[in-house]
Figure 1 (cartoon, rainbow, N blue to C red):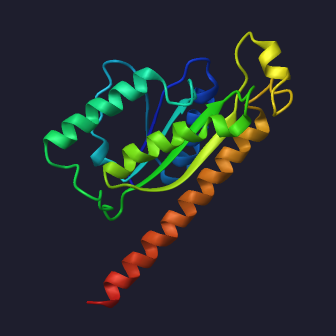
Figure 2 (cartoon, rainbow, N blue to C red):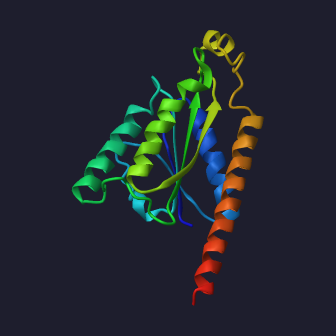
Length: 192
């Protein structure tokens, strides 16, 4: 299954999560592409079977740079006629959205609009989005914000336990997808 980890990061928290995802996919399936957003990033999302897309939360949304790329892709795909009414699911196309958030105000709920925005992007492309993962991450050089939010002291996050949790989620997701592929293949063979 051709896999892409596509992400943006500002302070390094989302990079840590994206690299953990990439490392786990590569160790299980042998390969995955990982691309950090930049203005010149040009990606054919539709060539991937599994897209894992993430960002830090900035005012409840992904970074502007990531949103700009998504909107450019949406306009291009729409102009090419590939964005269709009701956004039908394309068989064999899966996605996961992930994000890091500080949560000094309302905790994880600050991250929900961001992953929902990314989910809508993938669903417009026909991907079946399987999950959204939210990982606490400390603001760089902002100890006051990192100590007094609803989540308590997050100065050391994402911590080793957060990264281990993400790796475990990825491994579980890949095992489920592999079982799904094997079952679908067996069903196809039984019809012959």
